[in-house]
Image (cartoon, rainbow, N blue to C red; front, side, top):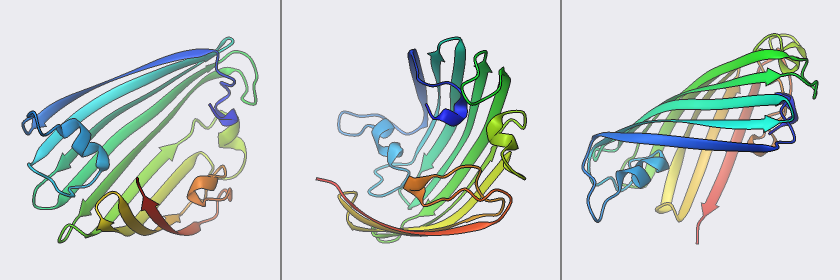
Length: 205
């Protein structure tokens, strides 16, 4: 867990997840639960619609954290891929570990749409929204830091399927970010807009 959560270091935890296939058929040679995790309709063999949900409980001393999500994904043989998820985190803080004692709830959601052409070129758009509990430290560190929004547009180019893929995307954060996200190229700049341009070459062996 990150220090911003107030639940660190973790003593123990457990998690679980369940999924249900609403559209599609599972066969000996096709597992839709593996296929849809790629967030793309690359090489889709049939239309599938999967809903799922999960939760994780972690404890550090007398502090508790429960992270949970509910999500849905649709993939079609025509190339369309849709994804949406709700994500929430409940924190019960009794010992100050960077966050004042109290009970906090952070909520957010993400939606994404993509369409693949000729099994190679796949433009996509994504929007995510997060609202941190305004009473916690991360939310009062600066102006407007309780609200984080990100609008992303980009494209994947599959040179050799998922084994060799090039991704280029740009993200706009109209409220800035309350914390650094080094892996995403996002810098902390609360209350001011930020634009991030990323290029990634993925090679899987």
